[in-house]
Amino acid sequence: MRHSARARDAMEAKMRKYLALRGLINLILCGAPALASAQGYGAFNNDTLYGTLKGSDRDSFDRTVVQALQDPQTGKRFPWTGAGAAGKAALTGEVHADAAHEQNGMPCRPLHATLRRGKTDERWTFLFCRRADGQWKAASQTRN
Image 1 (cartoon, rainbow, N blue to C red):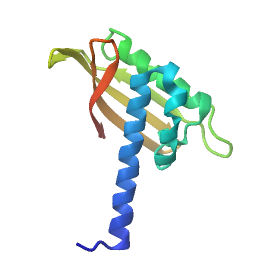
Image 2 (cartoon, helix red, strand yellow; image 1 turned 60 degrees about the vertical axis):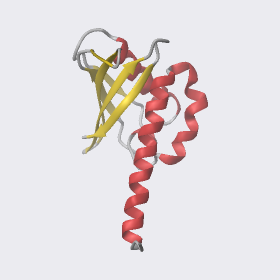
Image 3 (spheres, helix red, strand yellow; image 1 turned 45 degrees about the horizontal axis):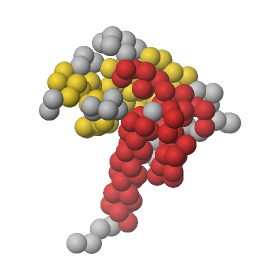
Image 4 (tube, rainbow, N blue to C red; image 1 turned 90 degrees about the vertical axis):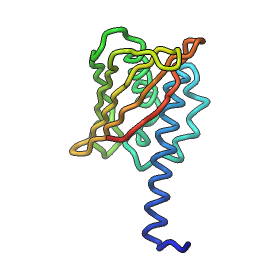
């Protein structure tokens, strides 16, 4: 089957967004100590707001996500503000987790993440399940 250049570009953009999400999920699962080893994902996610985060902003946002997952309070909002890149508006965000439930013998929590720059919003919903070793593993993700 032949695809037009426009269709091929659209498929490539979707793949980059998917890979960006996988990178975010891996960063969240690894937690702050492993962030340096996962930064190679940045090459795939430049078309998302998360992909524009650099260095300490990315680390700070990832720590906020882990904090929300580990907090037992349902719906507690964890705001986040980044320093912003030169020439761009500052990036802000918020994450919160819903009530935990059991799935396949593991405690799981839906997590909602929002990033904003100017009038652009990215909203994501993840389902994270905590493994026996205490690490959170993403079972699903959706861009809202």
